[in-house]
Every structure is written in C-alpha cells, then in structure tokens.
Image (tube, rainbow, N blue to C red; front, top):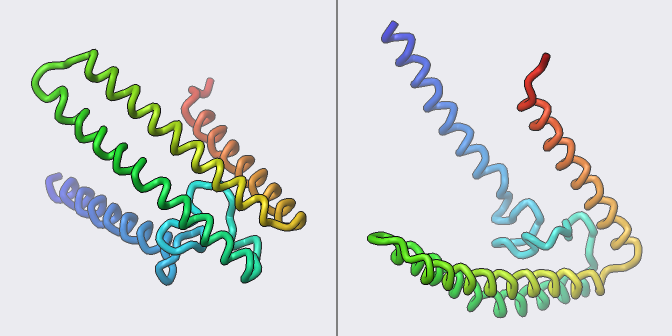
Length: 163
C-alpha cells in the first residue's frame, strides 16, 4: 500500500514539474511573448498586434507609443510596489484599520491612473490602424470574448450538481 501511495505521489510531482516547464516554454518563442512583442510590450491592451500585420511605419509608431507609456507607468508601478510593501509591514503586529484604509485608497488612486494610461495607449494604437486592421481586431476580440464565456459556462456547468 505504501508503494502505491509513494508511486502516485512521485507521478504527481513529475507531472506538476512537466506542466510548469511546458507552460513557461510555451508562452515564449525567441524571447517574444504570445502577443509577439518582446518583454511584455503589447500585453494587457487587448489587441493582438502581431496578427494585424502592421506596416513598418505602424510598428515604429506602436513602439514609440509603448515606450512613452512605459515611462509613464514606471513611477506608478514603483508607487504600487511601495504601497504593497507598506501594507505588508503595517499589519504584522496589530491591525490598524485607518492606516490600512488610507493605503487602500492610495492604491485605488494609483490603479485608476494606470487604467487611464492603458486606455490612452489603446486609443493611440487604435488611431494608427487601418479600417481593415480595426475590423480584424474587433473580430478577434469578439472570438476571444466568446471563447472566454464558453470556458466560464463549462466551469459553471461542472460545479452545478447534476440531478
């Protein structure tokens, strides 16, 4: 019985390691993310730019937009990180609701600025796309949304007890 349990545990450990290894390799090809942008450029804006076959001029403009956005986001990310550290240190000994609420409000303000910057970046990129590229991006977004909703429905169906 012990051998069977140890065998199952060994298989689970090996399988977990394989899954983690595959997931890290699968998302990267030649240093590029799944969106085709190096080191996360393009991530989080909801547009698969690689699939839109941008021209050289458009690629140069997109790079300039991302570079400017990155410079705006850096201090916000640093503020976010500092707030996380303050929050982690704050309540180690005794919970202080007032100070926690203040840090949460600061965090919300930082997140609002980040959302505005991300939407500004999307808007600037959208402005340089051709009508065909905009149509293709809209179609890809719809397909992605439908696929996502399908996965959510599958999860919900799996959770509901069958009679």
